[in-house]
Length: 304
Image (cartoon, rainbow, N blue to C red; front, side, top):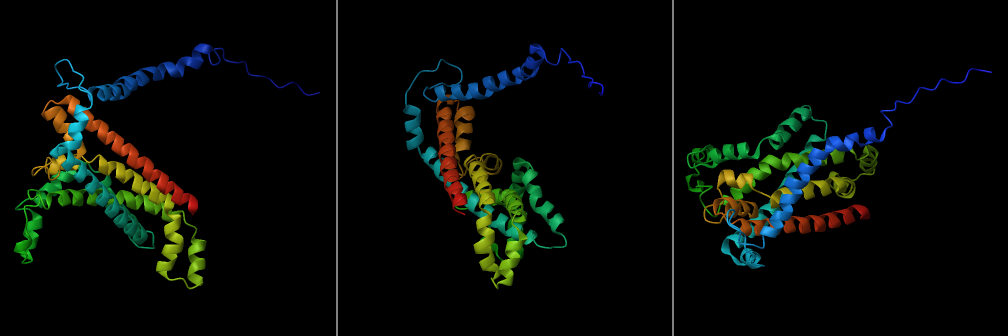
């Protein structure tokens, strides 16, 4: 008979109750800080939304007065309208451009890796830094107007960020330019997950490129489209950096968004209660739009 296998003695420290609780003890400070400063601040903001707190004096409960003002004031209506317009066109254009770039770069291009890096590079840049560069481009004596004048299009020059008719769309251009590469990355990942056998079989059967895209590629991109639509929607509803850097909400209320109104009402005007009400409205809007969007997009995925 062979010798019985030698068992290693158990380390008493490894299996002690104290050792089992050690990871929780190490994580406890971070958990407490997160609960206190993140979720605690959220709960406090929810309470202040129903008060007239100015950040210094004792808050007085005012019920739904702040929310009534949010729904009726001119600046709030302008901010809501601008937020929805920016979000809709930002999501639409970013996805169309991102999908087009992904289809182009998914082929056998000689410099496709370099082009992928070039188109994705703006995504990792600071939105504030990008916005300040574009602010120079849009300035009265900037490259955009100079280029139009060089082409003999003096009548097309504008005070792009100072004209209420062009300011919001100038902000949109900056957002789309910076983040179309993110949608491109999502769609590239989806395209690379599509079996080439399906595309080749359809090509052998004589299907045109448009028909192959409509019947095979586009339906199989549904999971990528879900992410590529949902995330930019949240980013669009929370637009802040670009507006603050480019126009600070002006001229007038032409580029105000819900996020800029939260900042101004809270820290510029000292109306902390009113700013908290704006924040709750924005939170509810993001939540409702995101849930509806995900339900619709997930249902589309399940039908494929």
